[in-house]
Image 1 (cartoon, rainbow, N blue to C red):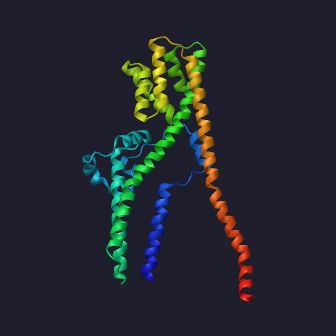
Image 2: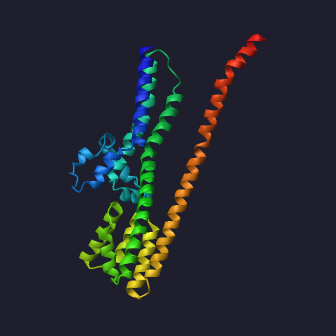
Image 3: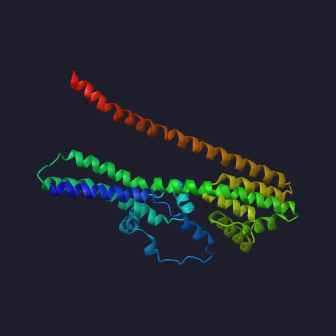
Length: 297
C-alpha cells in the first residue's frame, strides 16, 4: 500500500512538472509593466545557469545525435528564430527520450518488488512509446515557439512598413527611411531588423539583400518579398510608396483574419466543455428523483 502511494505521488509530481514545463504560468501584469518600463539591460548569466536540467543531462549525447544529421533544416531555422542553441535542443531531446525509456522500466521494477510482476511486453511497449514522445517533444515546443515568434515578427513588420511609408512621404530617401524607421521601433523583431541593417551598413552591402537574407533565415516570406520590392526601388528606381502601403494593408487584413479564425476556433472548443457541464448538471438534478422512482418499483 505504501509503495503504491509513493508511486502515485511520484507519477503525479512528474505529470505536474511536465505540464508546468509545457505550459508555463503567465507572469503577473505588474511584472510585465515593470519590464516594459525598465531601460536597464538584464545581466547576462553564465550559459550553465541558463540551461535547464534536461540540457545538462543530455550533453554526452550531442555528438552522436549530430552524427545522425540532427537537427534537420526546418528545426534549425526554428531554433535560430527562437534563439536557442542546437546543442541544448539535442541535449533536451536525448534526456527526455532517455527518461521516457527508463520510466516504465523503473515502475515495473518497483511493482515487481511489491510482488505484482507484469508481462515484459507491457513495460517494453510503454518504454518505446514514452521514449518516442520524449524525443519528439522538444521539436514540438520549438515549432510552437517559432510559430508565435513569426506571428509577432509579421505584426512588427507591418508597423515597420507603415513607418517607412510615412518617412518616404516626408521626403526621406529609401535607405535613410529604412534606418530611421527601424530606430523608432522596439522589441525583438525591430532588434533583428536593426542588427541586420547595421551589419549591412558596416559591410557596405545593400540593405535589401541583408533583409532578404534575414527573411530566408527566419522563414518569413513577407520580409523576403519586401526585400525584393526594395531591391527594385533601389536599383530600377520603381515607385515604392504605393507598394509598401498596399503590402502593409494586406498584412493588417491577414492578421485580422487570423485573429478572427483563432477566436472562432476557441469558441468552438468551448462548446464541448459547456455541453459536458450541462449534461453533468442534468444528471445531478434528476439522479435523486430517478433513484427514488426505481426504489419504489
